[in-house]
Amino acid sequence: MPDRPMHTVPGLFDRLTALYADGMRASIEGRLHDAIALFSEALQLDDEFRQANVTLYAQRAFVHQRLGDNVAAIRDYGRAIEMESPAAQAQYLFHRGMCFTALGGHEEHAVNDFGRAIALSPDQPGPYHLRGKLYATDLGRYPEAIADFDRLLAMHSVAEAYQLRGYAKLNLGRGRDAIPDLMAANRMEQDTYTDYLLAWAGAIAPDAVLPLDAGRARGRPRVVSPVLPGQRRLRPVPPPAAVPPARRPVTPPSPAAGGMLTTGSWSSAR
Image: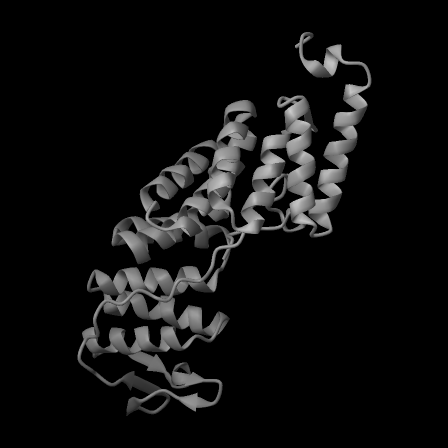
């Protein structure tokens, strides 16, 4: 608008452009506190300034998120969501959902933001991954978790998605259905927790048969009972308590990896 400081104060546009560029450079170089200071100075001069349609609030929010200051990031993402286009809003909702998740105790806020991101941009994998993870490990909403992992795995093969889809199926008593997912997870990324879930699946589906090599984890045989040549069956054991997998930290995807402030496909942010 013509009455904005950028349009009325001589030389201010050049000063804002320099602060924005210096803030971006500091962020890329890992000088995150310097980046916060530069973006904050620019916001004091004209809080509607942007470059390539990306606001100062969005840039500062991303740096706050990288620093682990999720409260400040949530506040800045909120302003960016108010000011930018729906396509950009979807990315900021995704990242704000990550911040709510990292804070803990705000799972429903995170689920809401991931859902809004999906509504605006349904072909990005990240919101399905992280919402499905919350459904499975924090909220016990297993059918919804399975639906999100179905959507994610239709786009990308992600070991954790197979593992958690298997975990959700186990909690619904679907041991036989869980085994292919857990085996796929182990093929992609060996994890002792997946071995534990496979033992659970064998306990609630004792007739399920695994290929001979499915019980080997980097040269260590899983405890199994041979049933036919070339096949092994998981030994039935008492069903374990429904303990969710240990939470892996959620970190923001870097711009270069197709995360915040780029046009690439959003990372699943594992």
